[in-house]
Amino acid sequence: VALDEFELIRRYFGTSELGFPVDGVVKGIGDDAAILAIGVDEQLLISMDLLQEGVHFPAACDPLLLGRRALLVNISDLAAMGASPLCFTLGLSLPHADPDWLQAFSEGLADVAMAHACPLVGGDTSRGPLAISIQVHGTIPSGEALMRSGATVGDDIYVTGTLGDAAAALKFILAGESVPDVLLNAYYEPESRIRAGIALRGLASAAIDVSDGLLADLGHILDASGVGARVHLDRLPLSPAFCDAVAVHQQVELAVSGGDDYELCFTAPPDCADRIHDALGRLDVGFCRIGEIVSGNSILWLDAQQQQVRLTARAYSHFRND
Ligand code: ADP
Ligand code: MG
Image (tube, rainbow, N blue to C red):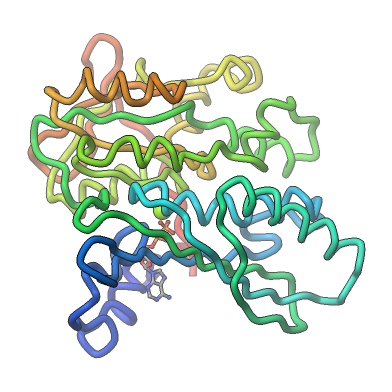
């Protein structure tokens, strides 16, 4: 029987022998980052991502872009919690030590590390297939982290930026076709949403970063919060470049199921709408209200006439076909 990635984690790693509660661990497995108590006023957040050649990035990827992307996608999990980056560690498995490759990769990491005042503080290096594992650490005033579990019935559902650009880029890269620059940029250099996450402290009731596609990641908010959602497909934020490059009948499916957006999906009570507008507007972060939290446990997709639409898209999951 196929074990999906999240079922696997729940069954073998989220067990009472491994993921058990102790003083000091405020939140363990199950959100974008773990939350640790380190003092009265501040909490420490930890999140790890593993990127493998051929799975998470195309083989022979430009090392400068790879370095930037590897750190950005990790920092995205801190953004999803509303945290400020503190530092990161780097686990690196390399087939061979190529100085040119390493120099460019190091520069890519440094671009993002300096932009976020998030220095490299340790790691481990070995020979093996190309794989990059980064663990980021961040901080937040105690109790202010945005979790996946806080959505309640009646909340509005928002996403920042646009959806599907990176997925469209990857589709063209893998097909060996030329990719419009705007889309390529969305894939290799996703916009950092750290400032947006911080601005949403005290406003958003739940948040996640869209790494596996809206379908999957809004699904995680619903699971963690014990609620359902109504999403208006005509309100999905699609970029002009995306609409130009992707056939009309494929747009919605790609925008909701394609990964790598690294935008924030968040929920908030309707009476926070004006403050969200001000807070994100001040940062010049585009955002869009795409639906509402309802009772239930699944996503109802609606068209412009409020008619229910059945999507064939499924969320990506490692191991599904094992
Ligand atoms: P994200 O997409 O934000 O990186 P995931 O949805 O992949 O997070 O992971 C869901 C949760 O499972 C997270 O809290 C993550 O820390 C945890 N997790 C994933 N893999 C493992 C593992 N091998 N051991 C323990 N926890 C894990
Ligand atoms: Mg995440």
